[in-house]
Image (cartoon, rainbow, N blue to C red; front, top):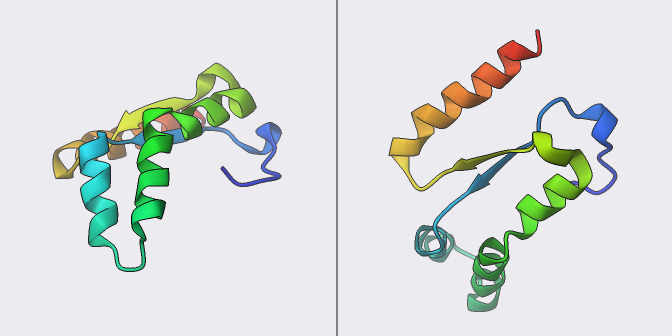
Length: 88
């Protein structure tokens, strides 16, 4: 999460999460990611670090969406669009 981002300046907080095997494969495919960095990111996903930080900062209104591949993409886009339309 961006340091200094204040809850009053955020209408919606969406956290994308992935199965750790999927996350590992994604990160391993990126150039420049060391084994240590991959391990750090997978450990953070296991411990739900970003989700917990989001809830601490923005409360129960945090929306957590699964993002394991193309099959999740359309549903996630629809959910985010729905959130944006609710705010209008």
